[in-house]
Image (cartoon, rainbow, N blue to C red):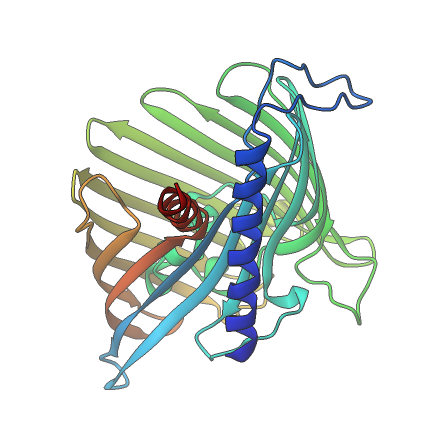
Length: 356
């Protein structure tokens, strides 16, 4: 806890210094880099957005007849730009459900440096494995684990490596990624994962499809096809997803299958959502320690008490994962996102006004 307070103090001083520097020299021209990416007339916002995100509440497991108040995590999230084409992003778990405050890279979700132009981008660092699933792609504090798939609950996506993307048209991207394999660790090096991803956005439809190879031994890979689809109809959103995984190509569509449907309806101050998913595991290629059929499902509602602001969210969700974990859970909680950059800006402006 002492480390956390020291860290917050350093962050506050950093924000104040950055705001003061911008106030003094807000019209300074950008230096021209070797990429030729800057013009003197172009001014870019370089103050990073720094947030602390947290979620906690009451958790009741009806299967084990156990209930308790608990926290789902405290995250530091930083996003900013170095130049018009270079940006960085960090997300780090300061504390988890077990109360861990480890500061190593094991608690870092992503740490990325990205070079991006109108037509392509290159990223390096720690990133999420590209998996064509909106369930798997969701931020930790926006997910409800007991109504998620076995794959979500078993395979950690955070790995080191590189990726590149090409933007052939507005709202379209094709990406290639090479990261460490989710089956690798320091005792089993030389295992890598590869992904080819397509993302597309239209007014009524959004796609996220991937073909994946995850190496688990020398020359041996789990093959996967993930088809994430999101449809928009007014305030309604419908996610329809399908995934299959196997260590042999002829095992696709047979060994490991996941299908899910997730509708939701959103209005000004709330969102109602539901999910139903089905899994069939005939060959355990991912380390679930489970074979057979499993259903995961649930429903819930989220409220946003601040008008026009979703930084505070109250949720109630009932969830079940019938055969894999065998749990039936009620989760009532509160999520809040603290924008430290905005708080620092307001504090600086107030102190400046007092001095005038």
